[in-house]
Image (cartoon, rainbow, N blue to C red; front, side, top):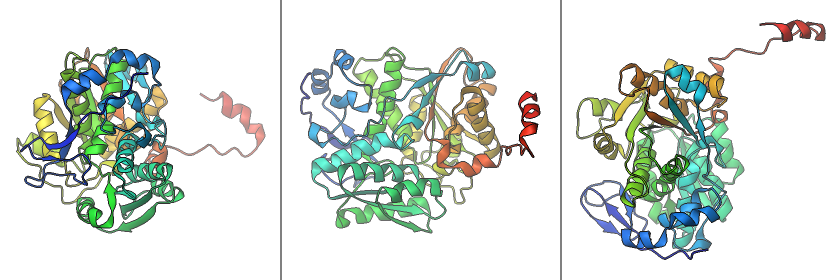
Length: 412
């Protein structure tokens, strides 16, 4: 196996050019408060990464290890994340009038959400820089993932969640031994306070749009391209809260194009719930900033950040990709959740059903054409948040005796 060449990644502000060391506990630009990103020396990457090497590697996220910032293989903390299926959704596509619809099923990750990709890179980097603890603020999936990867690494994990976070997510954190607290405050306010206190507390933060989380989550784009024969789809539609994952997907496709692995990039669909759509509304107004949503209210709790920290970055991506910001009502989200399950057998949480609900609107408005190849990101399992689904499904038929079974089984 080819040895991994030690690259020289660095943290860079894409807006003003400020640079920081990769080993620093640094997440945002000190001059303009823009999210920092990991940048690489492209010549070194070309030398280190050879697509032919992939034939001898397992199909998980770390098959692309030369394109990730962790340089010491012994630092890698993995639960075999990534390598999720790209499901060709023929029945669902037929219902929508789409020739080619694909579902990137991130529910197959170890803790049943896409967050495992970012947690793996973030915790691995914490190990590499010698951190004694990791942590984040989360509405559920990210914290559950962080707790699992911290346990795998033997690191202390510190988690703060907003009140009313679903117990289906909280129990994962607790069973993995995380130090957990909840607080009644807006999500973005909690996050800001956590990051401000992380250095003095000795906690390496792997929050919603931290550079290392973005690096891990960009690998979903590598997989989609490889699964499509090293081609980019016409559209990728991403459920969006902080916009860290949306930014990661675009970064992945941008790096593939820059390295000559694909001939182009997709148009990006940014999908939000109508009850919390600050990026979509700001994009439609043509603003150069994101207006926060003072009162988020949606069943899609996984994408309920009212003041997305990567919102400005997302606006730039939407314009650069000639993309579309779309939102869907709670009723449309529940219908999409049921349609995914009935047509393709995939039960996702409400946030993960938002791309389908928004795609239906985009098709109706003529934004997406029937002959275009569309990929929807299904970000989390429906078992994470069953309360919403329970409001739209029936209950079991109660048989008074076994003698009624034949009639029940033969009913149409």
